[in-house]
Image 1 (cartoon, rainbow, N blue to C red):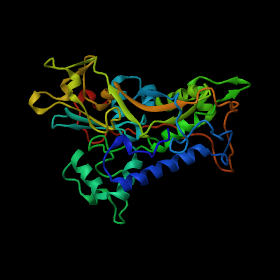
Image 2: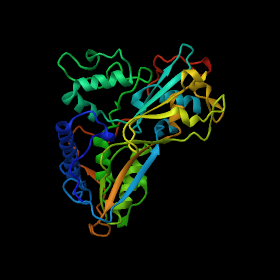
Image 3: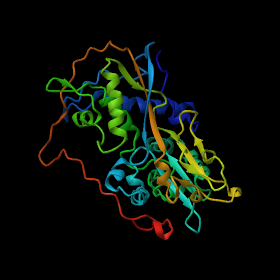
Image 4: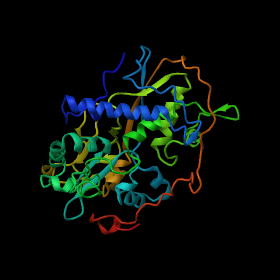
Length: 374
């Protein structure tokens, strides 16, 4: 069956039919770029014959869905800062270190206790699209989800350009409307899936492990939870000689929150304070963890493994993010494995990625003294 068009992220109903068609065209453009690879810059990066656009190539009757999920807590921080309090504080330091396709912001009271934590996995691409096609809707959504005080002047510059990292969407304390960290993009998701459909070999041996695949294919960041795992799962489908794509609507989604280790002061079910507030069923793009005022306690009065919740990042430890792949035509793609990607470097360029260096500042959050340093 041929997909008529790509739907908006999470099946949100922000725009009308004409704009939906424009969004579908934008996603198709991403698919075209990804399917082409980068043969000018890289050897063995194309063709990506097993990755297909479902609006141009039918999804066959043998199609199966593959839900791929990973931990939302940044793996790079977990590895570099082994102490729990230290790593929680580091992950709360900046949205620029929240690199697993989920970002968050914590709202605190005058005592520094958390009242609410907001999580988002919406890519900036949807919001820049909204800014161009429905700017008033964009402002209204900010006012609905963040604050009635948001004005259009807060979100657009004097030339009418949308400010991605605006005052309401750039910190871990003032709110989170959508993803801002550069690697957390819709294009990155599609690129990972497309690049990983190439079966790889080294010295005649087909590669199967996640780390060797991502380093061989040069897609994504090997240090993350997400990128190697996405690539490994997609490549496993490709090794079955299947055609692979992503399920409509294309996007990253919140997989869920596990509250088995949570304890509330009144014995209530901690899962009841977790709500999805944007996105269709099975495609949530926004969630909040919030205790209602009438309950008489705060999020920080809840414990996880005996520790009070002083950081939104403690919740991220127990949240998963997901994407949904689709594979079909199993056994019908008889394409020989390719060698590892080689960059075609020009003088003065480097194949090395920048080192990871999380910022030291915690922002303006007021924390109890026991958590103020680690």
